[in-house]
Image (tube, rainbow, N blue to C red; front, side, top):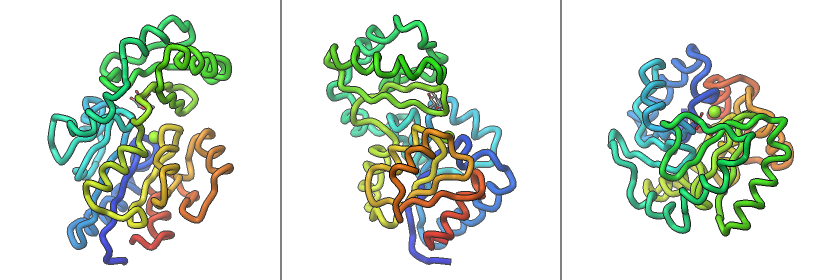
Length: 250
Ligand code: GLC
Ligand code: MG
C-alpha cells in the first residue's frame, strides 16, 4: 500500500454507490488510508444536500472531509450546513437564475425536476434522449441570444442541468484541491455519467471511469483517452478499487 496521502473525489450514484459488498471493501481501504496517512475523501454529487442526506441514511457512506452537491455548485466542509461562501460568490458572477428560467421554461420537452433539486446555482429539467438532439442546440442559441453565458450538462440520457459558466464538478474539485494544498497528480476522481466529464477534463488529476459508465461518458473517453484516465472493468466501488490499484494509490 502506498503511504502517500491523496485526494479522493468520487461521484455517488452508480459510481461509489451501486454495489454494497464492493463498497464495504473500498470503505475499509479508504478509511484506513485516511487514518494512517491523512488521505482526504470528497463526494461530488448531482444531488442536493437534502437528497444526499436521504442516500446517507440508506447506504453505508464514510463521513467525507468535504461534500460537493448540486453538480459542483455547492461545497460543504465537514459537517457544515452552509455552503462555502467564496465558492458561492465566484458562481454568482454573471449568473441570472430568473432569466435562465424565463428563457427555458417554455420549451415543452423540458420537464422541471422536483423543487428540492432546483438550487440557487442550478436549474434542472428532465429531457428525453430523443428530444435532446433537437432541443439542446435550440436551447444553446436561445440562451446565447439573451446573453446568458451558462453551461448545459446532460447526464444519463435524462437529466439536464443548467449551471453558471464557472460551476461544475471539475472546477469545484480544483477549488477544493487548492484549498487543501494537494497536487493534481495526487488527486483521483471517479465517475460514471455526463456530469462527471468535467471532473476528468480539467487537468492532470487521475481519473477512474467505472465499468458501468453511461454512453455519454464512454463516448467522451473514446475521444479523449489518456494515460491519466483508467476505464475500469468492474462496476461501481469495485471499479474504483481497481483504478486505485492501477494508479498505485493503494
Ligand atoms: C442528480 C440530481 C439531479 C441532476 C442529476 C444529473 O440526480 O438530483 O438534479 O439533474 O443528478 O446531474
Ligand atoms: Mg453518477
